[in-house]
Image (cartoon, rainbow, N blue to C red; front, side):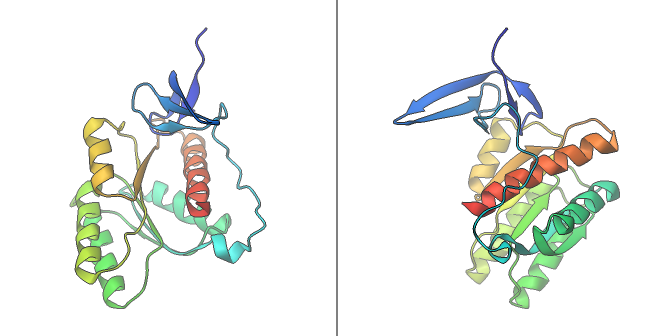
Length: 198
């Protein structure tokens, strides 16, 4: 039986490549190239650190997903896990970019954005490109973007993420079971915490 590890991008256990770099071993998914955890499963708990909780908390997070249920789970868990003070949720990319432009004009900084890829009116990739344009026009730092979608990341998607950096991708899965979706959101937050700590 071949060794497998869990890939956040593919949303399942996958075979992997092992790369030795000095004293460090890195693992990547053989299908999508996504970096994998050294553990078999992603951590679903937020590790306690010696830093104060306020230092690790996002002040403002924007969420765009056409599913009201998904938006609600993400919003509730960000607040419940004390990862964010304020979460604004939108059902499409147009609403998200309009809010981002307004917040930027008001000199309010956004700490992170969680964006679905397939949405009506304006998709997530277009919204992310508009956000990057607004940031460039206003000479402000790029907001970390996490694409949270059921579409598997292919070569084109990875190229888009490189162009939109800092950006990453977490697969939300295709199982409609609310418990499964909540579990995927927990994995997203585990990744979010790791991002915040680096």
